Length: 184
Image 1 (cartoon, rainbow, N blue to C red):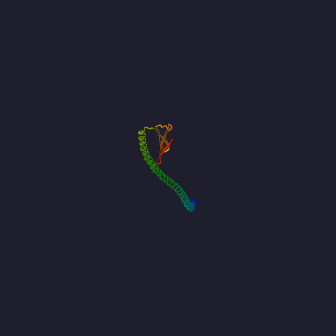
Image 2 (cartoon, one colour; image 1 turned 90 degrees about the horizontal axis):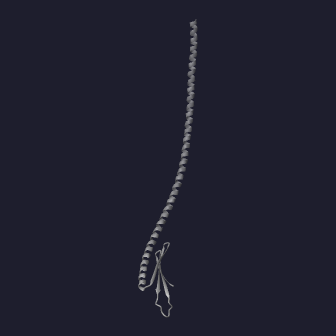
Image 3 (spheres, rainbow, N blue to C red; image 1 turned 45 degrees about the horizontal axis):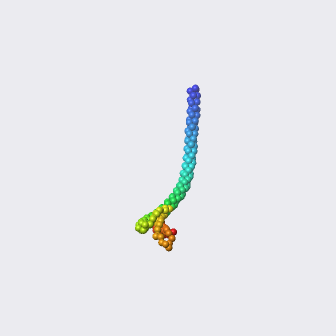
């Protein structure tokens, strides 16, 4: 009897353990299935968020790139304008340089002519026994050389003792050579 009782009890406990194991198995299946469904939903939401974030990033990059392109285009245009202005300035400077070169050539030619005439006049004056004073006036790009010639004429009875002063002014400038005589 005791053995029978134990056998019944053991059978009763075995059924309980068996039922508990089945419940646990069902519970695990439901739990795993629920967690799987939850993970699938979470993964789906994460994919949607990722896709949305990528779209926003792409849009932001496009806007940022558009802004950057606009900024770089504006900078390029400014540099091109500055480059054009500099080129115009260089062309003007070249023209001024050529003009100055031509003026300098003319000045040198006029100076050589002046020196030739001046030397000739000095030789003529020395032959006549006239006192000569020579000096230069320099202002800006102009060089003036003045020759003061003092002519002493023989005194006559009818004339007063007169000293005529002739100033020969040779002016050089911008390629022009001028000879002016002033009697005082």
